[in-house]
Image 1 (cartoon, rainbow, N blue to C red):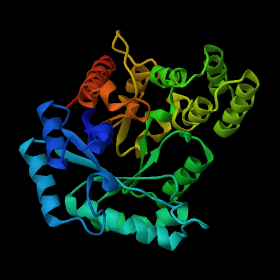
Image 2 (image 1 turned 180 degrees about the vertical axis):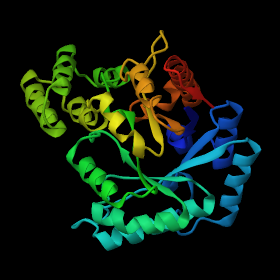
Image 3 (image 1 turned 60 degrees about the horizontal axis):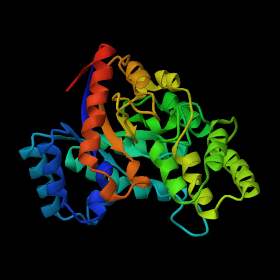
Image 4 (image 1 turned 90 degrees about the vertical axis):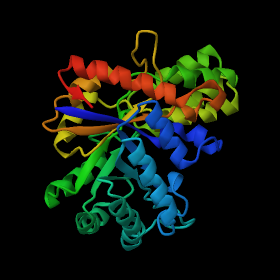
Length: 336
């Protein structure tokens, strides 16, 4: 099997938010640094007026940039936003109408996969399937920490997928769900905020302990209070329990038949060319076992705790892709 490598533009969030690039310039840089051929765009971040009022000139500029760099749009990240009202959750019909224009725009752009989110219920997914089929777009439910392949919400999605059995409903595994350690950069941020080594050790124990993520975090909060840890880094540590999951990476095997795209979540790399926080050798071995070709976007999310002056996202993405290619070759898979 072959995995087509690429990058989600979410990896360059700091550069984008700093106004260093327009969308075509960002794609040009991806092309110049040979980080494709796959490109994943983020609807509400990448396209002004998304999804209702994107100007044709902006769509044409996007297409031109993709074409001149010999790249390919492989996914569009949509948002479910089911909690965008102050007092109630979005109901099923409203969710369908919220997602419809995002799916239709993906179809107009010729994007084969739309990333959808766990907030979409089985009822909504059943109503979205014919919309996806009409637009020839596969909906990929992102499985992101604190969810995992076998958590209750994902199991409910798996059940409705089995019942409907449509090629337009699938999953996007995100490696944040199956991590082996807290990224060193995150711990450095907490130490810089005043957390002691003893506090970091307590945090690590809580993260590795059994139980629901939010309970483990609250257990850490109580212990940190007793230790006199500063309030700010203790509050910031909540990110660790929501963004860094500890599910078994072998559980991804069960989802391979319905995997439509992959998020190669990534935070760090050491001098040996491996990631301290995510077992990439194991993951590439698992995904090399798929019975068909896949696309994978490098998704560097270290910008959640690193300042822009501390990193070059393009260089970090390149190092990630080199690592993946090395481990995929070892597992007997090819890359493009």
